[in-house]
Length: 377
Image 1 (cartoon, rainbow, N blue to C red):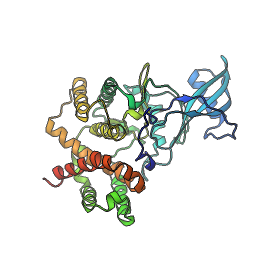
Image 2 (cartoon, rainbow, N blue to C red):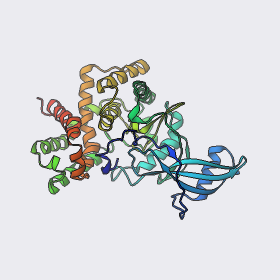
Image 3 (tube, rainbow, N blue to C red):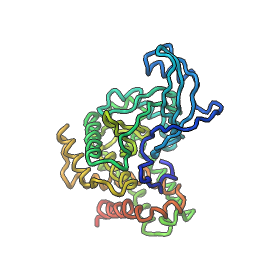
């Protein structure tokens, strides 16, 4: 998620949802794509099981809907010939940018890894991969049209998504060591722990030195809480490490899930990781609340449905006190892992526009978690 997205709010028609192709004037440009015609032709041959396919023109078209994404996302209308004659189809082109953290595998490499090696094992549906670079610099995926954007999700949509998340976690429950065969997966609570803590410490230092964003730098109480998080990172992560590891989507929320007539499709596997399941549930609740303040279901309803679904599938049960402990520690860890760095890179004007939501959705729950779990209040 880019820094500029921190203040974003979906428009009335849910423009932050998954892309839907809309007809637009096609511009004649020099080859603007990260792949070659040969790369795309090879991918389409596999996609359509037609070895005679050869790509002619590839032209940009407008994306009407766009969700927060790491990197660049656009659409291409491809004209190609094969056994069925000349065809024209639209595909989504993704270009992940950089890495999620220095020292970690690139976000694009993780996503390509999921599509190539894990997608057949997933209990939920993902879009089909057409072509991709081995390094994950670019991916070409099938395009699908949603029945409704995330801002218009129904209660049933939320319930389907939560049950699917529980099914994903159940499928890989306790298989952390088995997933070691995929070295590109993130391991935030284990091998990558130090990388995230160092990044968080550097972000806090930038906030203090620059005095920005003012909404954090001018409040000693908030700086004290953030410093306390970094100083006690090992204590924060300890209960999470005690949980069985599973496969995490890493950024599971309605903006990365397309409600299609044939079911739900899950996108954006760039933050896929191995770790405790509660991290995905917390991310789902907090990110959804950040973008859609008027959710048709509550955070408590989501957590209850997830716990019930996982109990029914795999028999996993948490006592309420244990779940609340894990939830508090997951909130603290997610802030260290992702949001502190994001806030440090955000201009004051962006955070000022979301000051009330930032306080209510992040700092108040964070302060309560720190008081309960780190300060013993």
